[in-house]
Amino acid sequence: MPSKLEKNETIAIRCTPLADGGVTIGITLNHTLMDGEGLFTFVRAWGQRYSGVANEGRLVINHDRHLLSGTGRGSQRPHPAIRIVPPPSGETIPISQLPATTQHAFHVSRKNMSKLKALASTASEKSATDPPFVSTIDIVTALFVVLISRARGHGQDVRITTGVNARQRLDPPLPTNYAGNCVFSALSAYSKEDLQPETDSDDAGINPATLIKLSRQVRTSILELDSEFLRDSIEFVAQQEHLSRVVVSTKYILGPDLMFTSWTNMGLYDAEFSRTRPCYAGIAKVPFLDGMVVIAEAAKGVDGLDVLVFLECAAMQRLKVTCEQVSHLQD
Image (tube, rainbow, N blue to C red; front, side, top):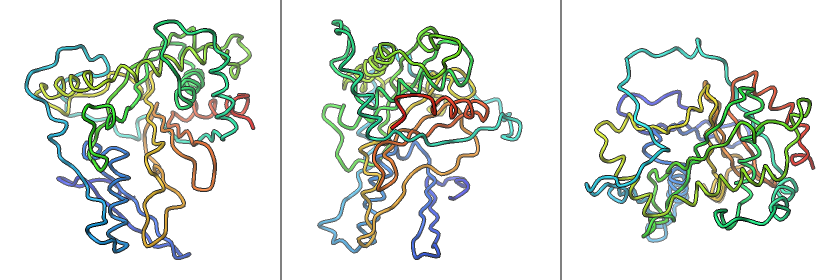
């Protein structure tokens, strides 16, 4: 991987030939330039050009920034998922002085996913305020909110930011070849009582009714991001004097909160370079990151999902032990 972006760089790419004739492609980019789907769209277009696809049949990248520009009318709603931070003091803490973090991919097989999805059918009758459905990703998110919160051991209420790809939520929707950043933040909150085990000796035990309750909270927060709300979010951000001071409101790094994003159905393995597709696509080793979870398709040829968790080392070790005991994650 390119180690970092130099001044004025927005993207850096390093290609490394392998002894078996393959190649690795490492991409480092400024996240304000592209989100996950934007990156994979870019790589598909790159692959088509490399493969000699004729211009008329080639994917053309759309990066029209005006599609997500404010109108100047100003925001009309509160946006609790976003906060404005003070100007930087100029002092930064070296990574060497921070607690060590690590990352680990927890595999959720198709059989595991079926078990989790089946829980939805066992839930009690919905109230009028409940969402019409919960997805498998919602349930996986809720499960790991519980497990990670227990592994951290803080015993506090937890808020989570869920990254939402808004391309098809906007009206009109963005072009399918849009390669910018269109991720918005959904915010949901969970009480410490719902996150704790029912007995002191059973960290792996999770009440199905509680899991469905938390899953519904995840889905409700996502459904709140309709086109009107998204456009108002754009107005809120556009009226800020310093965009670099606009951040998510959750304290997920070395705090009680969490950040979730999903890379499913984004075409991770769709790029083709001369009839060759990737056997693995994912995030490289990150020197320091805590409280972040990326849900993605499993490696090519493996069914299910990989839940990539970034966590402080001691908490990660506790999480690994607990996950080995969770019945929903056993085949």
